[in-house]
Image (cartoon, rainbow, N blue to C red):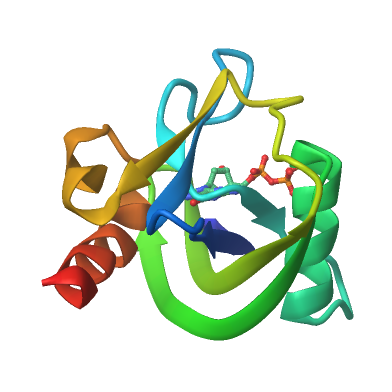
Length: 132
Ligand SMILES: Nc1nc2c([nH]c(=O)n2[C@H]2C[C@H](O)[C@@H](COP(=O)(O)OP(=O)(O)OP(=O)(O)O)O2)c(=O)[nH]1
């Protein structure tokens, strides 16, 4: 049976209405794909604590989660992911990549020009629709 993982990711929008996108590095699982920064929810951890922890670990900044954005289950070849995206506000610091190859702030209408991790497509689509 395929392993199931629960992943929480942050949809962070800046004052220019741009969304933070992160490129997975060549050494990460699912290399060279764009994603919303975040990671696996630990046992007994709530979603807000998990997303704040992951963003602090990965990008060195503090965020405040606002509302649930999307939830999607995607079956990859070797595992199944439950991807939960949460809209978040940056409250302290500047996001800097420590694990990712690069970060990019993109307007919603340009999000689909990136090669996203397949599980992220519904969240990307939703963001594009929210904008129109
Ligand atoms: N963080 C994140 N992971 C995603 C997204 N979409 C997607 O398919 N994934 C996949 C990639 C990875 O296989 C998995 C998350 O693993 P991760 O490596 O980012 O999480 P983590 O930091 O908790 O991992 P670890 O180092 O503790 O093993 O989910 C997304 O938008 N954000």
